[in-house]
Structures are given as C-alpha cells and as structure tokens.
Length: 146
Image (cartoon, rainbow, N blue to C red; front, top):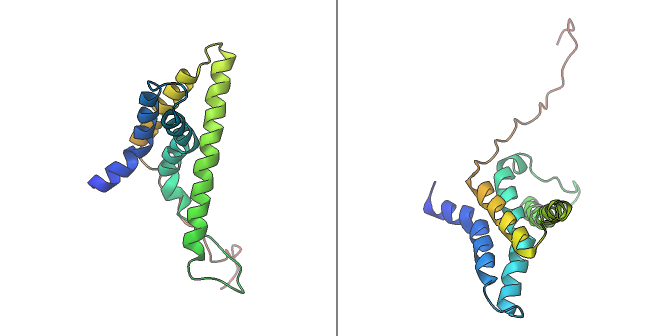
C-alpha cells in the first residue's frame, strides 16, 4: 500500500475524530456544525464504499447505444459512488440513532462516537474482491453438436 492510498483510506475516520474534537467548541460554532454535518453526510458511507469499490468497479456502466459519450462510464461511476456515499451515510446514521433510541442511550455524542468507531473499523477492512464477469458465450444443451 502506498502512502497516498493510506491517506485516502484514513480520511473518513480522521473526519470522524475531527468531528468528535469539534464537539469541544462552543455550541453555536459554525465550525463545529460543519465538521459534524460533513462527517455524518459522507464519512461512514465513504468508508463502506471503499470496502466495496472493487466489486462496484467490476462491471462498467452501460449508456444509451445510439449516443455513447466518451466519458460516460467515468462520469456515471463517479456519480454512482457519490450517491452511494451519501445514502449509505444517511442510512447508517439512522440505523445507529434508532438502535441508541431503542436502548434508551441516545445522545448526539454517542451517535458520533459509534459512527466514528464503525468508520475506523471499516477503514481497516480489506476491500472485497470482485466476482468474475458473467459468461457471454451461450451454453449449448448436452448432446448437441456445435
């Protein structure tokens, strides 16, 4: 692993620890709000998408056949990952908050701490391997001549 890959891998957990440190700022501080909102909106999802990245990139995007643009696949994959980051983050935040509410232990600090720990754990997970591409040659029935 190169140093650049390590830095990219550790950005989401670093954002979580930074958001936890920002809780020490005064309650109405815009810096505190920005750090927390940015982490909650992107941190957990970015860590999860990084783990799934090889599996996501196994099959390229397919665009309209009649007017395929040169950069369609790259832009489509980028948009797909950005939306996954956002929606996975929101989903994980809701799930953690619901669990903490159900156990009567809900607080903003606990939600943030739990998400930071989960994001740090996901940063240390190895990426998933991509499954092999599906066969493109048609199968023939047994006993038939080709």
